[in-house]
Amino acid sequence: MNVAVELLTTALVLVVALLASVGAAALARLDGATYPAVLRQAASAFATVIALAVAAIAVLT
Image (cartoon, rainbow, N blue to C red):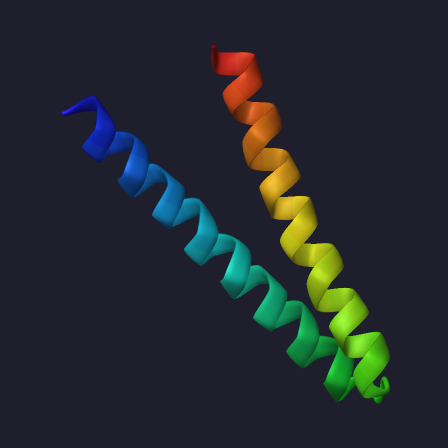
């Protein structure tokens, strides 16, 4: 049971991180950024969401 909850939580965090990175990329592209800048923004958003999730897990444990 615990393994299933952990796997589902990990999948949810990854989906939220991907959605945040896609949103950041879309907003950067609408602002007229170049493709390398868009990729940089998307990667930064993805890493930030993952870092926040890790920090939240560290606080809760």
